Structures are given as C-alpha cells and as structure tokens.
Amino acid sequence: MSETADRVRKIVVEHLGVEADKVTEDASFIDDLGADSLDIVELVMAFEEEFGVEIPDDAAEKITTVKDAITYIDEHQG
Amino acid sequence: MFDLTGMTALVTGASGGIGSAIARALAEQGARLALSGSNAEKLEAFRAELGGDHVALPCNLADGAAVDQLVPRAVEALGKVDILVNNAGVTRDNLAMRMKDDEWEQVIKVNLEAAFRLARAAARPMMKARFGRIISITSVVGATGNPGQANYAASKAGLVGMSKALAQELASRGITVNCVAPGFIRSAMTDVLPDAQKEALTGRIPAGSLGEGADIGAAVVYLASKEAGYVTGQTLHVNGGMAML
Image 1 (cartoon, one colour):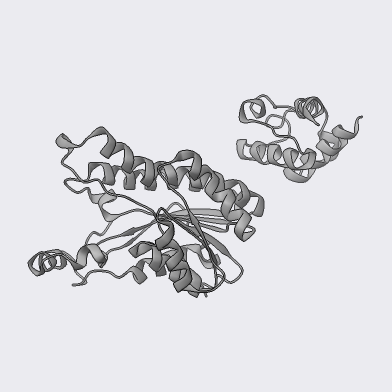
Image 2 (spheres, rainbow over the protein chains, first blue to last red; image 1 turned 90 degrees about the horizontal axis):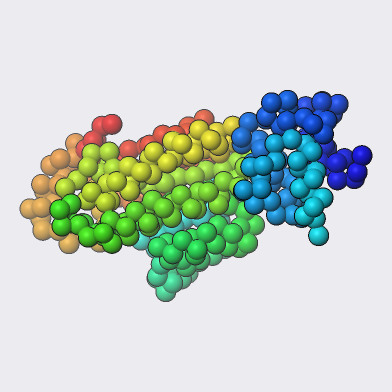
C-alpha cells in the first residue's frame, strides 16, 4: 500500500473512531464506516491539511470511498 | 461565571450603539476582539477608546467578496475566532407598496446574507477547535413584524431560521448558534424622539423604560460563555416584556 494510503487510513481511523481493519480501500465512508455528512466535511478538511492539497466542494462530493480519497490526493498533490 | 479570558470574538457593526455595548461587555469579561464596521475612522476611534489589545477590521458587508475575507482576516489577527457576533444591520424603511428593489436587497444583503457568509467561514475553524459560539442580533420586529419594515423584519426573522438550521448542523461539534432579539434600546436614534412619542413607546413596555445597550451586551456574554454550552438554536428576547414569545 502506498504512503498516501497509509496516511489517509490513519486520518479516517482517528476521525471516525473505527477499527483500522475496517478501513479497506473499497470502504464507503457513509455506508461502511458510519460517517455522516458533517464527518465527510471534516475528513476533507483533514486531508487538505495533511497533504497540502485543496479539495473543492464539487470534487469532495465525489469522494465517497477510501480509494476515492487516495486517488484524488495522489493525482493532485504537488 | 461567564469568564471569557483567552477567548476571541469578531463583532460586526462594532462602532454602533448596540455593537459597541456588546464589544464592551465581551472585553470586560476578558475576550480579545476583532472589531468590524463600515466606517474605518469611527471604528479606530472606538478601538482606541476601548484600550487593550483589540484590532479594528473595517469591512463593507454589502460586498460579498470582502465579507468572505473577514473571518480569515480575524483569524490572522487574533490567531482564532471563538465567538462570532453578527450584529451589523441596516434599515431602509418604506411601506411595502413603495419599497424599491434596492431597499429590499440592501437590507437582506447586509443583515442576512453577510451573517450567513460569516457563519459559514467561521464554522470551519470552530469545527476543528470543537468549540464555537455564533450569535446573531435579530430584533423583536423579526418575530412581531412592523409596518414599514418588511425588508428589515424579513432579514431578522431570516437570522432566526438560519441560526436554528446551523445549530442543528453544528451542535455535535461543540458549536452553539443563537440569537439575541432586542426590543427598544436607547440610542442616538431614540434620544431625538419627541417626548410624546417616547411616552407612547414606553407605554407599550411593561418594564416602563427603554433598554440599554448593556442589557444586550450581557445577553451576548451569557450565550458566548462556556456555561451556555447546552443552549443552542434559541432566541433570547431582551425587551422589557414588550413581547413575550
């Protein structure tokens, strides 16, 4: 697993308080990890801070799984 | 109780009658302030008068882009914003049938839209901090209506609805969102009223007198305090009993 993936998973575990082994790449934040819409906003804020990327609202709406987040960050990181 | 030491607040309309009383009350409880207003000179004079370590951030609330920059400017100046007080308001009174489009728009833009823009911007750092207080100054006429003030009453009632929605969105993150609704408060505007009109006005107030700016300041201090953390989505009416809602 890439370094980005590790850091993304760590943030998800910390913010949602879920077991690390549940945070698979295919896991949906809302359906599998119990996040609500406000949690997603917070996760996106945390990703922006951790990786120094800007995730605009229209992109954030499309990030629904752990993999979506990793892919977006990998593609947009300076 | 109600100690605000170590907390920071952004207050809009801070050089006005009620706004300056709110700023004084927050400062007395130990908060450090970013004072905003449209008149830079008046604002700076008030900041100097207040003393202490407060900053003045002039801003035209009718300019959406400038409003969006105000919270970031306050965060830069103070390091954080724990308390947002949406106090600034304008009136453009007219009977509805005569009301011009721009009279409606200006009042909604400054009183309601700017408050939303500021709350939206402040919610982000407050969410991260797991603490925040968003307090909007509405008015008794937002609840009762008033002839000649369709625009103003709509903007003030709008603040109440907006605050209730925000309160529900943000409650789980330690952020409370409330309103304070002043009745008739003594100000430069009421001082110049003829005695007969003043008497007619106070006749409608069970307390028998107009309120003071400090009465509003005290209500804001309460809602801003840690002690009021379980109070959210509410409107605190401060009106001497003239409307019991």
